[in-house]
Amino acid sequence: MLSYSYELIPTLILYNSVLALALITPQFAPNLFDLVSMLKADRVILLDVEKWSRKGRTHRIEVRAEDGTQWLNLPILSEDRKKATKDVRLDSTQRWFKLFWNTLAYNYNDATYFDYYADEIRHDIEMAYEFETLLDFNLYFFKRILTYLEIDIQFELASNVEGYSTFPDECLKNLGYETLYLEHQSKNYQRQSSKAEQALKEHPTYRQAYPGFEPNCSVLDLLFNVGVESFRLINPLLKE
Image 1: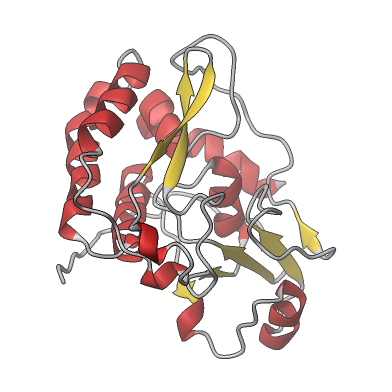
Image 2: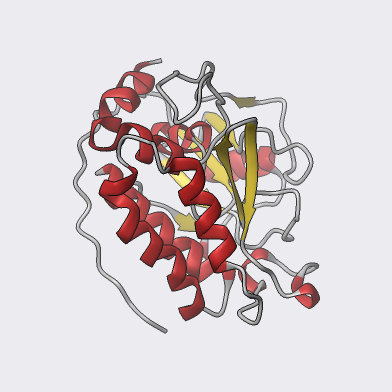
């Protein structure tokens, strides 16, 4: 397996004083709701042992489109769809990359920072062919996103956490945290908890490539539109 090293530059100031736990599925490019949950949390656990769900965001991102948003997907081997996320493999036999990238490029060609990041992001997405499992690619790409945003998020895989429970309330108790953040809009594929709080209550707006604003897009949308100034938008959210 290929190995990579990353120099992460922490430019954000954390304001959260309550011990918080974030339980998030391992996504390759999460939206801002989940990114803020991870930034506010004292401990981030990526749920690699939970059953993979086609309704989740481990294999897909929501991007801005002219008439709203659309989903872009990574191909998954059909025989792995009932397995734990950590065991799901990418289907490298499918010719998915050209459509994926062309759609992304079409929608963000006029975004302020698209040209600035395009070559590297294109290469990073195409690197999916170098990985057998979805999880390994997601971790690679997520770390690349953190590098571009110049932020640092330390995380653990649930498969390596003693005391992890598939039930969020039990997990919170077992690990000794006070506040719980779950994945945004995850009721169809993640166990929920009445104790869960929303780390980001109101999504900030910024100029997108098309008129209007869509709040659930992957952070690639933030990167292409706001770019090196993204920290100016993210940092105030951590005070809430």
